[in-house]
Length: 348
Image 1 (cartoon, rainbow, N blue to C red):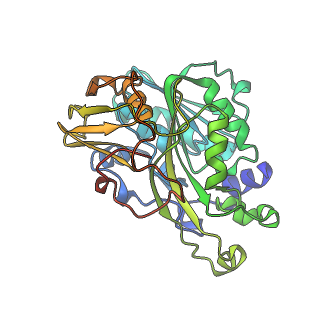
Image 2 (cartoon, rainbow, N blue to C red):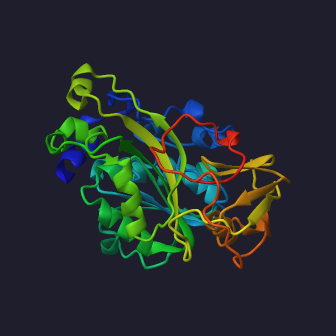
């Protein structure tokens, strides 16, 4: 399937317009402060964008970021502006044709951004074998990936390598395609369905235990949307399988528990994260308004206290007492149309 993917993204697809689903996001969903950054990205790079989500979390200045499956580099060049000259963005992709486009415009972007030195690197390699690229243990602050992990046959290896290279307190923040059931084996061999990020998609309830097995104990859903298949032939092949584009953030943090446990803790957001003056949205179920005490489980407390977010919150309580499971926790398909701000307490 790797040869299929390389052919599909290197030769079959010549631009976003060639895609046959709405998995690829439009730029209309971008936050206002990101649009000027995107406008500085070269048009040839923009034309080769095949992502399905927004992989631009908060507080990136000075970080070392790794983009798994960077393609022609659209996200890399936006991230490069956010990390600044003191940071670095490393893009990894296995499709040579995509990297040719990305590398061709390195000098253009350095001049456009007004940087004295370049702060991006593009590596030709496989996201399942990062060890072949000399990426050291615990050397990366943040990993992003935009609709690529579904294309990897060995998703276990991707998560294992991501955990290895992340620093403690770092995170894997990525968008990908998921299904509401396991994909039949015959469909996984269809080159168009696979290339369109459909038949390689993980069943969401297989992804969660897989992430936990490789050290990401408490995956947090940030947002999601349904994917429509505009091609009648492809829609007939997949039948009643439903597909979703979803963004998760997975923290590399010791001490996280399998469930949301209540220790009577709370946080108060200071309103100091740039572009988030009135509220901070950790994930789909944690919309934390500025100045308001917000009850949290122990895992959420650690995600804010033991990461780059710590100085932007006041923390109340400790782990001395346990009150059982955090109110509101439950199971079920996570992809719904719930509005993040509707939930008053924080629970995944």
